Length: 111
Ligand SMILES: [Zn+2]
Image (cartoon, rainbow, N blue to C red; front, side, top):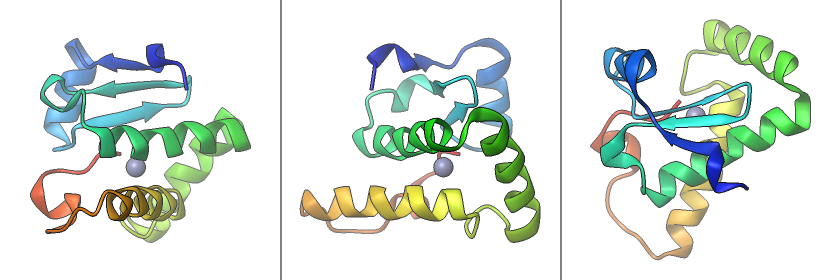
């Protein structure tokens, strides 16, 4: 995954993330915007890489339409794209032997 896929969120994107109480978002054009304090958060990056792979796998138009439809139909946590991303993130966390509360309870989640 090219490092240039990750950029610090600035301007309107930063405002959007703050307003939606989240710290990172993957956009259909293959770029991941992350709030500066979370920029090097490994688990967040793993989560967003899953979304990049989903976009590669399904195409950006299909991914975007399904993401929005599933968000409306199932809500954020049960959105199958998010379920997949959080499952892989949790596996990475477990491999590191991390314990404690899952990320979602500590801070707003990455989209
Ligand atoms: Zn997500």
